[in-house]
Length: 293
Image 1 (cartoon, rainbow, N blue to C red):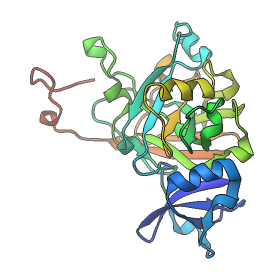
Image 2: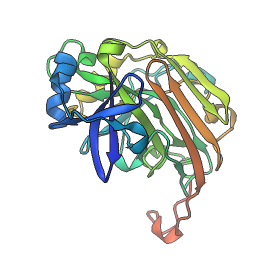
Image 3: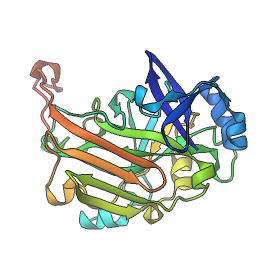
């Protein structure tokens, strides 16, 4: 099943999308309630409007429930680390994104003012349906999966010689997610084995399979949940593979078209906007100097 979040006639809501991805039916009730019930009982748990709406009449939104958090982990594909001259870490590297960083499946990616090295990262994104609690297999608590492109500002922090994840991962309107959530009854629980692909202007830059993750989905979920209790609607980016711009210096430019495809889920297609103009006085550092990448 495909669950989608849309805007239609100035209202934003979750809906069930038909098999042809043409029409949708609005889901009634609180997300935390129906998502948890869906994870256990399937579509019988959903209360749907009888009248369908054409997807073409809607704006597709990122599949994030308002109030949900966005978590990410890095360093999760060995081939990527090897190309950077690094080795497998002992544990995941985690971070948090604000909701304002997300854009929809066809929205523009905003080119931030504070970077000249805008990079791309195809990622499988897990969507939480219910608290993990004592569930022996954490992935059984998911609603399903969606596609993500974890756009990064690679030069963030270089001039001070330290990692700056706030600038690198959290800037406004830089992270495409969607177009919908494909539920576990289609993809199954446990570790997904799905092909992932990213192209820039129709040139393939990344291709791999999620079976190659160093830390599987269950371990990633437990890692985050041990520190911040996961809640219904939270998203978890699960890391990216080799082929990113950081490896060969081919970073994104204004006007580029970036497409992400994940087997069995769907695709994202986003254009990179012109660079955002920022007044230097709005980005002052500790000593009153303008912040630069």
